[in-house]
Length: 457
Image (cartoon, rainbow, N blue to C red):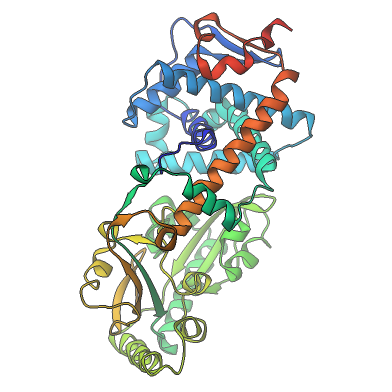
């Protein structure tokens, strides 16, 4: 769309602040100075702006003087949001801040390969990194929470969407690539009772070695866990929210005291033992060891046969696709989306053909809208394989934006514009009540003119 809302920029810069404060490559400026003061005590330094500029350039974005003005505007806005949050008693908890810090540390550990490498590159321990950036992370989280409260009631009606679309000049309408809407019914292969028992007994022995024999949990995870995402990190899951865990795992984990190890827990992924590293309210730092029962060729054949009968019901019209997903599907994520496959970046069910997973892209020429694929074994991610049939709901050719085919996309842009307007109105209302002093070097920036007289108060 041909519109760039300040809200979109706000969100991007608030997020950038969290990332920048953990950047290991940005360097402090040798001659620092104060660029802006908000509320007499909250300051913005030249080094902060230059570090953000460096991050933008590393990401491939050209930064001119106008962009620097906009970046400073967003930094001032963040300080205003924090000031307003203080007035309105909007807070974030220590647990929330700790969770964000832990997640940032985990991200950089994965980026550099190990905790030791991260500490070597940064010249600081993980503890020191977290302490150095705790206040900056807290401030960013408070600003985001305050902005969320300002915008929480902003909605958009179909009439407003149409009015927004009608105002776009015909020659400014974007050209959308070919897209598809595809769904899937996933049935995981059943596991034989004998192999289920074998997996459980193996994990029972590992637990006994740890709890009774004094074996190291992290070492046992390195040697035995079948979770590729955490095995090489000693089974460490980092800080996770209770709501993001499958129910059985969550129920067992949040009963544990710090340092305690659970009994064996069965989930759809297999058998686990869980170690509570540290509880943080509704978040927790956890480790686990996963043992998965082996799935045989015969097990896959049973699932494919079941899908074949489901496909026959769909083709005959005895059951709808959504009904079949709910009745036969074993994948909870698919059930939550009604079987439709979402774009992992946007959440939209409109998938760009050029970005499709190769296994799905190969089906486009053979599936017509309303048709179903033959049952197949597929890569379900994280080293897992399962079985599915794929449903082709719709296919669109490359086209100019229109309300019929692109309502969801147009609605999102219209909503962002409305939120941007709400933020601009909030800014106009609240700005006169804040002391804001800006360095003369930036006073000529057009986006900062709203505060030009505030520093004289």
